[in-house]
Image (cartoon, rainbow, N blue to C red; front, side, top):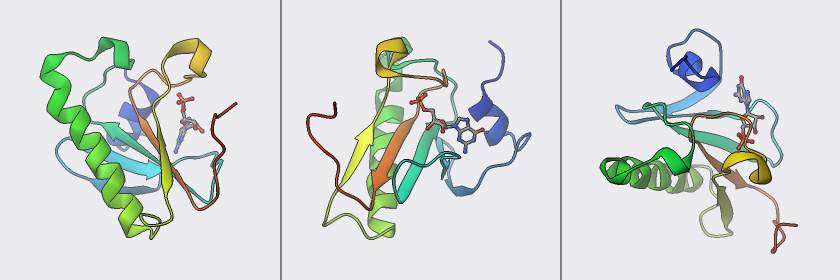
Length: 114
Ligand code: 5GP
């Protein structure tokens, strides 16, 4: 598998505003934010889509979500609320084929998303 753009960010081959990293995940600011807070939480392991994840990735994916919640708390939006999004394939508009969770906050989000 060739390196995704996010793997290149993780390897510091291309720049990004990295705000959190541990042995399982990296989080950085989205280059094209759609909300005042728009952070991507990305597993260090390059898995193309959520369809490709399996049982052995359960803890990793849980860690992605809990990291998003921790960063939301750090950014002060836990109480007012925020949205977590994982897009999968073309109908959802996935453009980077390396699983990532969008943390969106700082404004009101409509439901249904439209
Ligand atoms: P998707 O549509 O795949 O769920 O989301 C991909 C996200 O990655 C988009 O919000 C896009 O703005 C962001 N993105 C794409 N390339 C880069 C990049 O090189 N750096 C950063 N920081 N974000 C990127």
